[in-house]
Figure 1 (tube, rainbow, N blue to C red):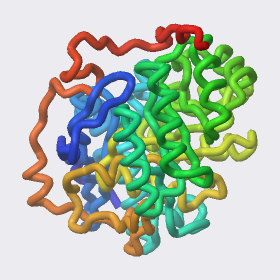
Figure 2 (figure 1 turned 135 degrees about the vertical axis):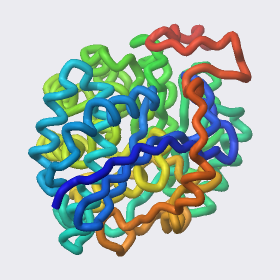
Figure 3 (figure 1 turned 30 degrees about the horizontal axis):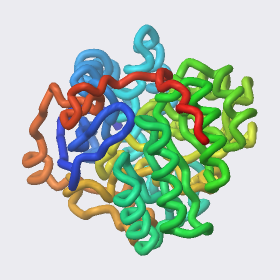
Length: 392
Ligand SMILES: [Mg+2]
């Protein structure tokens, strides 16, 4: 089998409402679809998510496509090695491009074998993936009402963005805890906003409210500080922005800095590399959950195949899929409340709706998830939010 054509298609699907986090507000889920065609008539589908999608698409078109055309798409490890070496001088952005190719290669290989992508990754360990109720920065009252609605639809875990106002964050978590009772898990995500002192102070105040874990309290580069926060705060700690690939995973494990990896198939460089990180995590006793860049259906289902084939992923995963107005697939992914069932069809198990791909094939190059149109004075910052005022 040979690769005969590769299409890269930018798409952008609106969210049902704007969502606010510590670094900005986002209104849509953009992605670059990757479609690999072969001389045997099989087609593989992938999706790139991540920052600077125009750059990621250029890497696909100008750098990776020439390596892939004419190659046997079933040689995934060989092609990944070629692509990894090719992008070595810009690997953190290059991996996002490789991820879209890797998804399409896995889709093709599984279709050619008549099996599902999860079967290539170890087989079905679980056929359903549990997702959390994902909450953004809002008033305590509105967050509490949203939390109650999520729990009413079956969510057993809630995730709350924090990191703009420490006092208000504590009040928001308290309001949500009061609204949902003690059985529901609550995790928080500071997206690197806090200084070390702020992280310890805020998390010590939140700890009695029952926090499952805190994502990325400090900047991505501060592994030693994160380890100190983990020791001092009394709350388990997760790496998200700090987990950029297998080498940072190793560094985080060696520093005993975190309890949880928030893993993105896109950022890891695809399913193969993500699977390697999960294996490291297994060996180190680190829990893995899927993170989200607001993937569309292909990116979302790829993460589901990874989680479905692993003994890890015991905790609820992230998705923005429930916030999308629509998707580019012929059928929406089968979510029942906050639980999604793996598709039964071969490969990733999804197909593109070409009319929707056309409809959402608009591109706004200036869209960014950083910055806040509602609050022009807000400047996204990392590791800068200072300790709270003394209380009492
Ligand atoms: Mg996060």
